[in-house]
Length: 338
Image 1 (cartoon, rainbow, N blue to C red):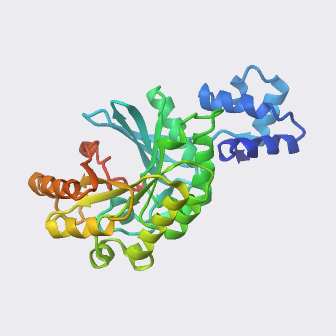
Image 2 (image 1 turned 135 degrees about the vertical axis):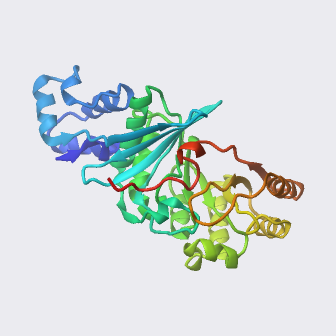
Image 3 (image 1 turned 180 degrees about the horizontal axis):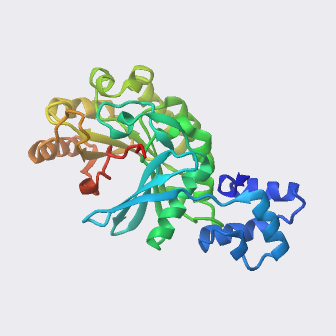
């Protein structure tokens, strides 16, 4: 039985038509699921009983099972989900004055094995389907009884290594008939998969591209992010420039500050040089402990780093930490063995 959440609107419309059903039924089903949060065909009362029974024989509406919900003092909520095969992922709701953001996972674990990230330490199992990705958002909205209006693919996994399923999920996320989230409120974060960045540049979608950078030289970046040995900084920056030529959009660089590793003024100088021809902003992130052996940069060093970037024409900000008390902050999500 197929999970109906794996279909974007055009896919579901075509599927229903192939089954001899009217295409407008797709609009009704999307409204029930994504607007009304109804996850039972039996409760879709503007559809005939016979058709509801037929749909329930052809499709399922599969939400992941909520295993645990953890609430932070700052309002952040972390969810541990279990899928039908027993695999688990975590996702997070982050609350800001201007938005309610869903931090979504795209893989069970992550294959990139970055030295500072708990997700990579927990191993990699598989990609998620678009329906499994969508199920996290639906599940969080239902659990918290509120509307998410911003999505960041910054949870577990490398989105560009699950490109097709992530883009199918984004088509549902941004569909006015589904979640109705603005394309400019959807961020896709990558550790630097150059092929994926180029593909995303050619998508008919106006998304936010975020690059997990974390070091300004190949030597340092390769020592903490093995993916840099395949896609070095030169190729990464060239792909970002290509993206900007096509999209004419500002790019965000994420930069975790590690004490006496990448937070010196010399590192800041190298970062300014690396990004000198790119329209961007830099999110400076205080390292959150994952047992990696790295230490958090001091407030003084972080402030000096931020100040140097700003004085040299780089828009930079130290990102507000959220969810660290429940291990829900940047780099802390992990696959759980149940």
